[in-house]
Structures are given as structure tokens and as C-alpha cells.
Image (cartoon, rainbow over all chains, first blue to last red; front, side, top):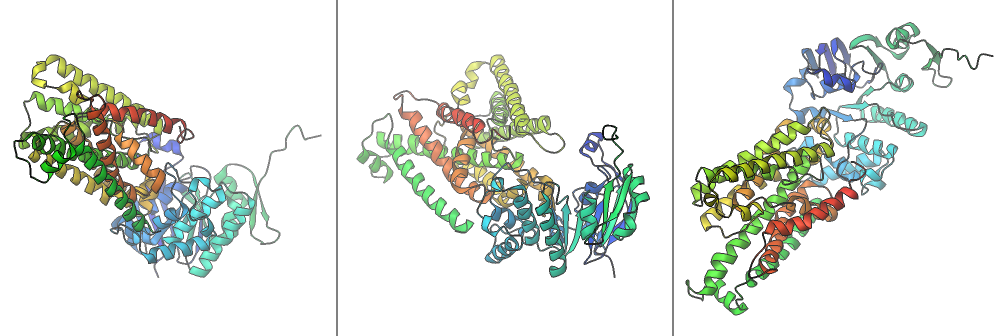
Length: 274
Length: 338
């Protein structure tokens, strides 16, 4: 059986040096595979190449070497709409120059299913409503996005991605701006989508604990290269993490879930040393 | 109510308003014709050489049609530039694109292109090229990795506008002024009667631009989320931007070629519609076509009548409305994003 997503010796370099300031490092010879039905996590330090990897997968940029495949087919051969029917991305945040409503945003997820159509059909609206119900934003449907809290906006974006009815759901730093409660809700929602709809999930995050908690497999990136791939317990080893992140860490076990939890081994502060 | 129903309702109401304004515009003017006289001319019961026929059919009617076409095209160009740049304050005149087109028109006139249909097409081509050049310059100056910031884009537009206005002044200074008859009046926006064949060409070019923008309306909604997000939702963003860019330049160039650079229609009309209909470009593009027509027709009817028997340039009226409106938008609604 072919994997759903396959990176085969993928390399990438941004052409102009100023692009690298955005925190996108180049990738070199990256290979890994995501099996259908998995919750797969990509972790690593800032500018390790996580966002670049996501852009390569969604054909926002093209690799300079190697091949990215979806279901065995190179993504460079797929039209943008075809790709968007398979892969939905929940971005970190969305620029909002125009105050679209939540429902308008979620309906945008229906675009790849009929790009030539001018207005959405009744079926499109039904799918959008179901997606809003699944993420708990149905009551907010008529509100402009800018009136939503960070957590509500995140759930609206997730509803848009679900309305795309993709096979692979990609989340870029889904808990970056969320407080504890929404982090817990987001994690639960991901696991539910994965279990109930059989949707493959790709989580890109530098929140190691979240990744350890929800992912079946992890890819640890460091400086544009694969540092380690495997089950969370294999990847989240002290020596591996210290090598990639360049600081001392303590790997603990979560008291209730039994999954790994990572702490920074803070250097002792002179003020507190009595 | 679904988006389609809202669009039909809005278009219905706007069309009624457009017809009403057009009728009023046909019946008032400095010639002081009586209402029955205008009716006689409109129904063909007056002689072809009679005053009422000449004034109504050869002066007022072409002017009404030109105002509706120019206003509609400029408002659609405004929506297009706003969607393309993801900047709610973008507009052909503010971005300096109108000045680029005007430079093209003056250049065409220096080459001796005049009023016949074929020559009018030549002028429109020059105006289109000027608009493309100015828009590309603004875009290149303002573009930075990660998008266009609102203030940089507006500043680039002002700079490019000043440059082309200066270039126009140079052309006017070195060329025999009499060859550029009425150029000052034209530079403020002027809806002098256009011959029927040229008017048909005007309509054709404006509708072509409108059709391109309308076909891109749904994708423009997605582009508002950012280029990367649009691509990830299945939009071929590079193709979309090229198409809308060309369409907006075509609309601007066409209007400037036939009526001169009329400012702020592309800002005032789309924003009034946004206030009522929201941000969906599928509703904004068609309603802007009709709404822009109404706005410019009202402005031109005022321009013809407030200082009768003399008349103002219609661009003066739209600028008097548009400049305060721009300041209002800048100070209130978009303050946070500046």
C-alpha cells in the first residue's frame, strides 16, 4: 500500500536571501511518509523548515530536488483545486483586510469542489453548516471574523478546513495563540476528526507536549534535515532533543496520559541560589 | 437570504434607481427645454433638426450613457484593485493608475489620434498601456516579501501619480497647446458627448473588463485570505492576479481614454455597497457596475446644472465627494490597520 504522503529526498532553497528572514529555512534531502489514518506530527525548533515543508506539500512552492507525492502521484502534476480537495490547511492566522462573516469563510472551503461555479449550492451550504456545528461555531455564523476571540477564530478556520472534506487535514501551530482550555479542546477535536471521519492529520507545531499527546508518529526536523522519525517515545529522547534544540531538557512522563512531557532544564539562577 | 437572492434584490433596486436618475438627467439642463419637448424628442415626434431633438438625443443622451459606462467601469475597477491588493483603500486614481492612463492618452493625441472610432481605439490602447505601466510600477515599488502593506501601497500610488502628472505637464509644455484642444478640461474628467460608434466601443471595452472581473469574483474572495491561503484552497493565484490586473487596467484605461481621469468613484461606490451588502465580491462587482453608473450620472447632472449655463468638470464633483470620504475611511474604519 502506498503512503498517503511521501517526501522522497526533497530539497528546497529559497531563491532570495531576504525570504529566509521569515523563518523559512531550506530543506535538504528530507524523506518520510505519512500513512493514511495517522495523526502525524512535525516538530522542531524555530526555522527548522516546518513551514517550508508544509508549503512544499501544498504546492505553494516547488522543490528544487526530490519529489513530494500524494497517494503515489507527484503533487506538481496535480491542479491546485485537485490538491485542495485532498489537503486542507488550517493556517496559524489569517490576515483580515475585509470583514467576511464566519459562514462566508467556511463556504470558501467549498471552492475546490466546483471552482467554475459562481455561487455555492444548497449542498455546499449544508456541508458548511455541518462543519460549523462540528467545531461549535454555528451560533457565530453571521458574525464578522474580526469580532471573534482567538479561540473562536481558530475553530472557524478549522470549520473551513472540514468543509473542504479533505483526506488530509494540516494544522500549522494550532495552539499558538490559545489558552489552556482551547488547547485541550483543539486536541480533543483533532482526535475526534481522526477517529470519526478517518481523516489523516498532519500537525505542525513547536508545542512538543501537544505533539506527544495527540500524534501516532513524529518527525523531528533540525536545520532543514530529518533528525528523527518514529513513535513519540522514540523521537522524544533527551539526547536527540538536546542535540536538535541546543539546550538541556528533561523528558518526563505525563501523570495521566503516560505520554512524554518535555521540560527545559533551566540553568540555576544565581538570585535563587541561597 | 442566500447570496444569489441578495444579489438579485440589490440589482433590481439599483436598476430602478438608475432608470429614475437617467430620466431626471434627460429632462434637466441649461437649454431649459420643457418636459413635453423632451418627451417629443425621445418618442421621435420632434423633427430631427429641432432644438429639442438635438439637445436631447445628441447632447444629453450620449452624455447619460457615457456617465453610466464610466461610473460603472470605475467602480468595478475599484473593487478589482481592492481585491487584488487586499487593500480597502485602493482605487484607480489613488493608485496613480488613472494618471498613467492619462499620460498614454496625451501621448496618443500628440501622435495625432483623434475622434473617429478607429482612432478612439488607438487612444484606448495607449491609455491601457499607460494604466498597465503605472499599476506595474506601483506594484513593484510597494511589493515586499509577505504582501503589500496598506500605507506603502498608497504612498507608491501617490508617487507614481505625481510622476505621471509631471510627465503630462512636460508633454503639454513642449507641444503646441492648440493641438491638445480642451486638454485641461479633459484632465479633470469631462463627459462631453461622444459619437455613437465610439460610445459603442467604450461599452464593449468596459463590458470586457467587467466580465473578466466578474468571472474572478469568487476567487477574489479567497485571495482576501492571503495568497498562500488562496493557493491552498485551490486558487491559481498567479493567474488570478494577472487576469484581474489586466482587467482593472483595461477598465481604468478605457474610462480615461473616453472621459478623462475621474477620481474616487472606485472608492466611494464600492464602500457604500460594502456597508450594505458585506464583502462578497460576487455581490460587489455587479452592483458596483450599476451603482457606479448612478453615482457618476448624479455627479454629472450636478456638474451640468449647478453653475449653468457654464458647467463644472464632473471630476471636480467626484473629488469633492471622494476626498472627504477617503479621509473618513482612513481615520475611522481602517485606522487600526495603518
